[in-house]
Amino acid sequence: MQPTTYPVKVAIVGRAKDTANYENALRQMGAQSLTSMDVKSLSAFHGLLLPGGGDIAPAFFGQKNQGSRNIDIELDVSQFQALELFLKWKRPVFGVCKGMQVINVCLGGSILQHIPEAACHAWDNGDKFHPTNIRPDSFLAKLYGDRLLTNSAHHQAVDSLGQGLSVIQTAGDNVVEGIAHDSLPVFGVQWHPERLFPGFARQTPQGQQAADGRILFRYFLSLCASL
Image (cartoon, rainbow, N blue to C red; front, side, top):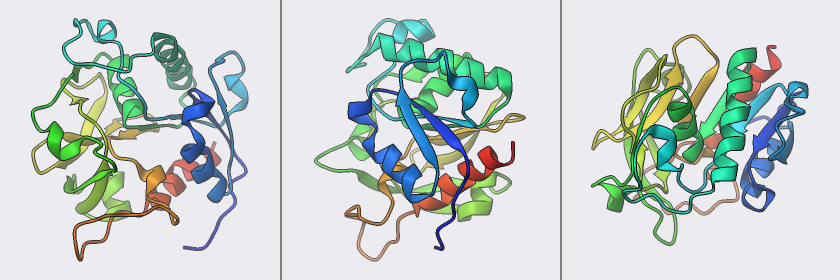
């Protein structure tokens, strides 16, 4: 893949100790980024990246804790506030793993706090890999086709969908792996494209090729550059 420079600035709302992989991915794609919990200066950014991490506090989707862990309410609040601004501005938003769930909850959806299929999806000294199906009429199908081997490291999943969202990718066990807004440049994936760049070890099933994460980052940055 030929390198491309994108003259855009991407805000990563998270804690800097947890976001190096996202910063490196954006740097490899020729984009600038800043990781911050401060949502006061986001108007200067072309796009928002909501990274993976711990679980959303269940109170935000009207539930008691039934298996959620590694909760950071301060981070949740910052991410919801940032997302609400970018939805208002109609600017691109890219959610990864927890970030996808933040998009869903912010728009009124809910989360399955511990999926029965967790053994096939959760981190276990490394990412799990599994095939997924992509909705044929989605932007994701234009990028990757209708089937894709992806990585995962999650024990939760999207349950009810938020307003304006559609499922565009699922695993074979019907766990939601990708969502997109019907009219805004907002999307998320449950997998980790930032760990599917050159330089990361991929322990994929023998003979199978995993997704190239650069393709999805390039799509996001192209949306940012079109503003």
